[in-house]
Length: 620
Image 1 (tube, rainbow, N blue to C red):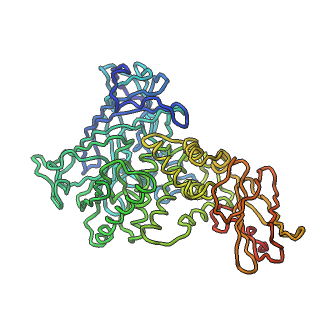
Image 2 (image 1 turned 60 degrees about the horizontal axis):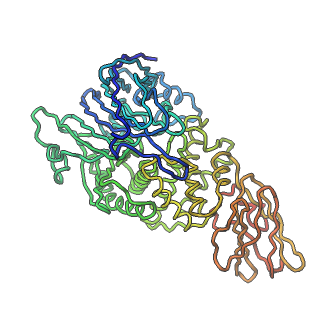
Image 3 (image 1 turned 90 degrees about the vertical axis):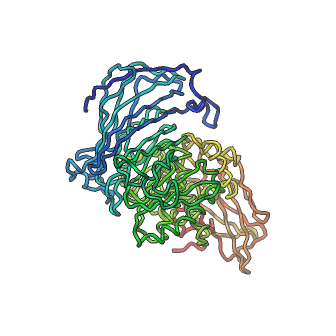
């Protein structure tokens, strides 16, 4: 625990003096009375690109919209994770299946290769305080508490060193990008209805406070910068911002000061390199799509081809989720794979075109599911990664005309593999508490995607699609949690869906239905069904007759308290209550001798872990 002498002054503004953009007033949503905190960042940063170090000043106005009085605040200092002996280092060397990008690399870093981020002073009217730097978290005890509805201004000086590229952020990545600047500044932790979110940085993802950013970055004039926000001084910068293919603007001291503003975001990221090509593609709804990639003939064609495709993704997500609310988005070569940030993504760019488009679709979709619908990625990562995987798979299927009946079939296979592996943990597990990296990834991405795809099986595809749009409209620029999504889904569908959220996310209960037997009773075929898994579901049953014709039957789940809309030729049977392990479906007017086959869920949109017993006769 490192003690830092801090200077803190408290300037408290009465609630009535707060500007409307700084306050999210209490209002009624599905989750009850909703509130969220607000921050305004003003940062001025000088970057020494030769030494990979930087210094900065930060002024932060924090508005307490909560009903509680706050006597301390917390900041994230993410770069401190990239040091030998850090929690990220320890965890990466001791977990059974380490991320190959990390592994034992951190422990081997030299002093000039590590990352660090330190706060040297804080002030607010010159009154000093003490704070604790605890790894990647800075704990600040306020000189004066912030009452509900009040604001306070915190000013601090900070200095950092960019680590060797290991995970997400860093310098000189594998493709030669100089600076991938993500998680680089002292970031205020979120305080919400669950309390403070102060998880240390151990390689997972993030949660931030909504606010406005005003950021000035001074760096050698040869570097091109792309990232979050709108550049305020394009004529003073050049680099393709003022006009196509322009070089750096003139500078007396060999440096340029870039000035960005980003309204209504919860993070700020950028990348910088001397060899970036900067293209601007005019996208749908007046959105400027920026592309930053290395001046490399081997990748140029792919990056040029990516630009109209990215616009197609923009149009797809606008139509199927809701309109992208900003006027720019940047696709930037950098980082260690693909990672989303406010108004931008950093992706590795030396890929075949299909991979480049796929990772762009996924990261761009995060702009809706996380950077507009800002779920807590430490607690509810499956909502962010899973919903993003679901919708980006659909976008790829449409934009590239893949013709897949179920674009998320791979996610079903991934989830079922995890469910049968014995390594699954409930999705309510904190992201850092998964025993296996692989289990975390499959749970977040695959099982999360299946949650949304399978919801269409439960309530009907059209209803599920309407739920997504209503969820976006209700919770954009807020921090929804799983119950918030469920309540929207219940309101739109008219069904009780507590069972679906509970069994799928809070347990490792599995879906497993079986056709046990088909018999004849008074000239009527009777199908004997069995629920072998603990998770209940409604059932779609397809009956095929000897003449090749088919009939569909729908067995509602009693706990839904309703029935999905089915076609006129579908026969709705009586409800099946969860506690009864067996059910008999009588086929009126069908003799067993006329029956060719019976199949549960013929489209395989239900994540049944054992499909071998879903068809009669049961296959051995």
